[in-house]
Amino acid sequence: MAIQESLDEMMQGKTVIAIAHRLSTIAAMDRLIVMDDGRIIEQGTHAELLGKNGTYARLWQHQSGGFLGEDQGVAEDMG
Image 1 (tube, one colour):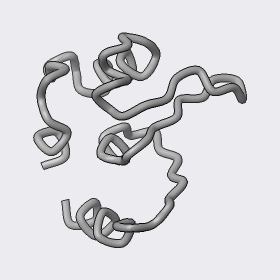
Image 2 (cartoon, one colour):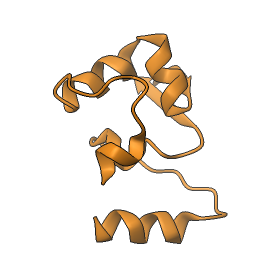
Image 3 (cartoon, one colour):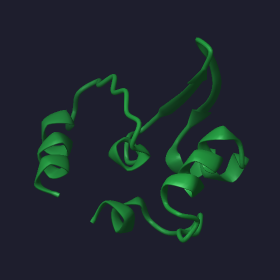
Image 4 (cartoon, rainbow, N blue to C red):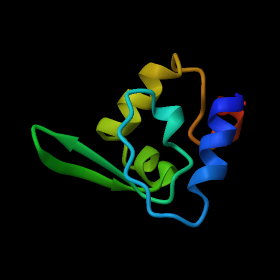
C-alpha cells in the first residue's frame, strides 16, 4: 500500500477534500461526508457512520464483502 501511505503522509496537517469510490481510501480521514443527489445525507467519522447503519455502512459492508465487523480497525482493511 505504498500509494496510500504516501497520500496519508502528504495529507498530514492539511485540509483535504477527497472524493473516492473506494471507501478504504478515505476511511481514516477525520470527517467523512456522504452525499446523494447533491445533498449531504450523512457525516461523521468512519466509526460514527458505521454506527448509524445508513448509506455509508451499507456501502462499506458491500465493498468489504460483509466480512469486516464494525469494531475492526480501518488499518486492517487498508493493510
